[in-house]
Image (spheres, rainbow, N blue to C red):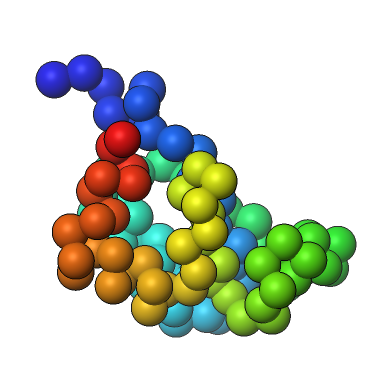
Length: 91
């Protein structure tokens, strides 16, 4: 099988410290062997503003797989439960 990371779209997780849902999202992505960029918005107010601008949301985590805005952890978990997450991670 080929290297999954070669075909995997870029994943960005806007996250924060002391956020259980953020940790859960990271664990789910790690369980899929997905590599992702973690942006800690509680450490960078400009990135928090950017996240709000592009998502229209103030809550974390906010997850992008490629250009697709997944939403938060509940949305990510729902994609996983429906079987659609693997298709997004490995197009």
